[in-house]
Length: 207
Ligand code: TYD
Figure 1 (cartoon, rainbow, N blue to C red):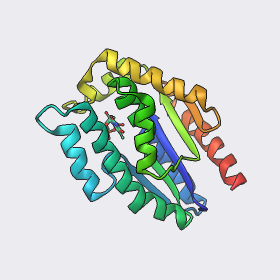
Figure 2: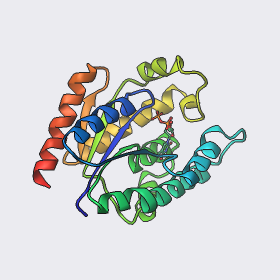
Figure 3: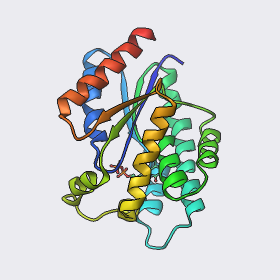
Figure 4: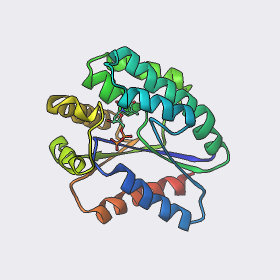
């Protein structure tokens, strides 16, 4: 596989999609094919799953929730991400299995190892080359989001839940500093982008 797989992680309202868009512009300017995508909802099937899991009106059992995200991920990787990587594209993806381990494994208190194993099975072990963690105090993230209308099921899960999610992400980054780039999402947008481009440039140099 010649492509590059970069994921963006972080709490709701941390600026993942803005940073991903700026990185896409830069990569395209350097002549790379960029596939910008996200989970949940990067495929037609995924958009239906996204609707069920995020906006359904009934309570969703937490194991069912984990399986729905894993089903979305399996289909998305098989039909969008792997084909793109195989033709040499750079895939920029908002959220991947670290979201499941943080939100379902730690936030919802399922076992983190089991949730990671479930995702790894779903994607046949595909690990990103780099993961950008946009670290932000969840209260600041929620305040940014509150201007955008109604909160979805996860966003409405409460301050303690989002605090656990943040700590979980920082723990993953500490365990795997090779893969993770942690940036302070409260900082300046352009400075954050500069740090991200530096990491990606070194990956492109090495590939
Ligand atoms: P979305 O609006 O797509 O993204 P963001 O909040 O990053 O702008 O929301 C996706 C929601 O789904 C978010 O609250 C996190 C949650 N989620 C999980 O709980 N587990 C997962 O595996 C994924 C991919 C997302």
